[in-house]
Length: 328
Ligand code: CP
Image (tube, protein in one colour):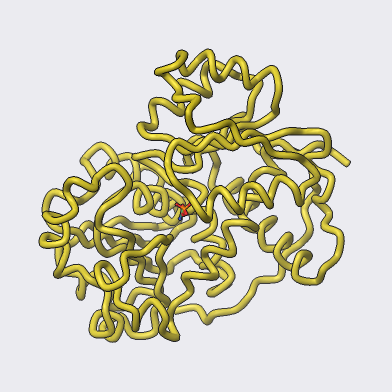
């Protein structure tokens, strides 16, 4: 297993360099572009820590970004707001009661915003809503801040954190224990694109659909593999990272009691982390402490959960800079 070490990064140009107009999925990036975003994020993090004026400080000068959130958020909302401002842009936050699709059609909301802002960061329900929005406003840059199916900005931060911890991630194994949800899907997409091995340990019925599993295997590069397993202990053995998320995601509250029963054997506790050996522990947050993970693990020496939260900022700054930044 590679040792944990911070990779030296070169400073990239602070201008747009991604081919995609929108970032509705991690699959909008090529593996090389994904690696570039992570490299830029690490460089931005270093510069911010040194307190110097970042090379990206004016990348979004004169641009506005709308933060359109239809679900609650702490990390995503705060880090996007800081990211836009630190890149020299400004944010607006349309009220939640714009109720896309109820008060007026999603496409009309998009066409209005397209006249005022350069980018829209959206947290919504079905991925189709996001795609409909992006399709209606091709001049905008639309960024997925979580849908029921994908959470690509979280995956950027997670992969950046793994790069920070291990230097090179190709060949590493990440074990996701729990629900095969949006966080798991985006993490698996990115990890497989970068040559990592992904193990997903879920109860029956909570794994990736056949369609998603086939899509994931299709994006795997450099010998990366995807294994779907039922035994959490087998999944974490020899892994470099053990990842879990809440058993009940936003919108599934009615299933919470049933899910607590089904997922109980998949709790990440000290015994499971011991089986994993030297692995780091990851969680996207918010957590239901005592359910999917114990306090001992969340607050233990292997936990890098707040590094992940911090890295939301650096990864998203890099994304915005390379997606919509202007040459300086
Ligand atoms: N991990 C994450 O997306 O956190 P928030 O829901 O607080 O944005």
